[in-house]
Amino acid sequence: MTIGLTLADGTVLVHLAGTLDREARALLLRAARRVVRGSTGHLIVDCADLCSCDEAGLDALASLHRLPGIESVRLRHVDPALRRRLDAAGLAGRLGCRAEAQGSAPAASRRSTL
Image (tube, rainbow, N blue to C red; front, top):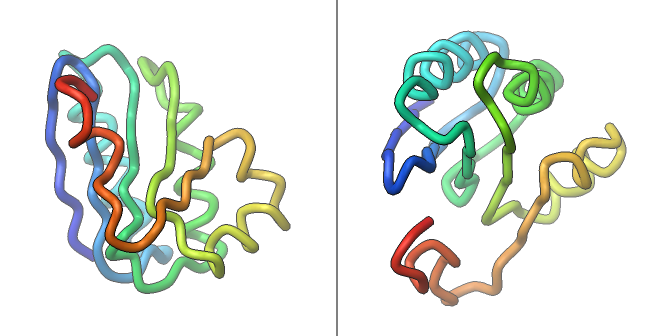
């Protein structure tokens, strides 16, 4: 798992690449705790390069909301398989899932701020 973090205008963009599993869960939560300081507490999690996500990975995404200082969490570039798992777990609405059409620019790049 590779986790990229970018802070722009107080919003944290978290880019996930690889497999979000039990091992990666700890990395993601540790990184989110570290970066939320100095931010507005708004996280956008980019799942475009996420290959797979098991139960521990779903729990990690849900746990982001419970971290101190986190105001909101939004997922973008969610593929249909992950969306079905999030729907089944009752998490899709809470995480504001967005699946964008192939080839369309991410919302953050169309605006001057995230």
